[in-house]
Amino acid sequence: AQKVTQAQTEISVVEKEDVTLDCVYETRDTTYYLFWYKQPPSGELVFLIRRNSFDEQNEISGRYSWNFQKSTSSFNFTITASQVVDSAVYFCALSEQGGSEKLVFGKGTKLTVNP
Amino acid sequence: DAGVIQSPRHEVTEMGQEVTLRCKPISGHDYLFWYRQTMMRGLELLIYFNNNVPIDDSGMPEDRFSAKMPNASFSTLKIQPSEPRDSAVYFCASSPTGLAGNTIYFGEGSWLTVV
Image 1 (cartoon, rainbow over the protein chains, first blue to last red):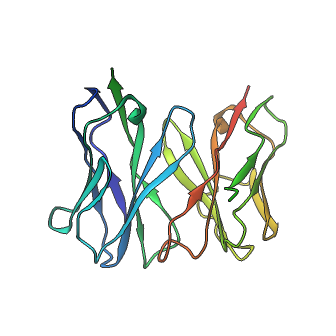
Image 2: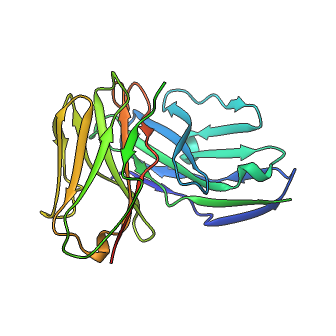
């Protein structure tokens, strides 16, 4: 069965620090998709990135970067030079191609960036 | 472009009352999902539709919950009778082609409190 673990429940940093949010997943499928979503204090879920299992290239988008490593079943998210506006709960999620159209979420990591 | 639209945004109701949550997906999206978010269980899929047809309702907690999608632009999630443990944020989401080819986009959520 598919499972996503975000071991860090809460992280607190000071503005301009770099921070990495960990995500470890479990799946038996060879084809699967990984996602990150951001939930700011206002409550909506904002899509950040989608990655398929055949694409292990790291991705960078501005201050955000993602490190996908199949060997360790991890899909970690790094924010460089964090800002107060990055304060949110971040969710990692997994979908298996062989299963239902189900997105299984981790429990989330609450990031607080202090000025 | 309009995103997924949910109503009501907030609802407080008394135990035993019927609750109806509404959702308008993004135009042209073939998939519609209902998720629930609670502190205890996190984000979990309740049901999803493909082309207005319910495909997987295994996440619906019990018979008190029902969902319909009478047309491509409207869906409802109904709880009857409501109970305090139904208090949660209910998210509607839609996707153009499903998770194998795309991501899903969430609405802002309906915050339900049952007292």
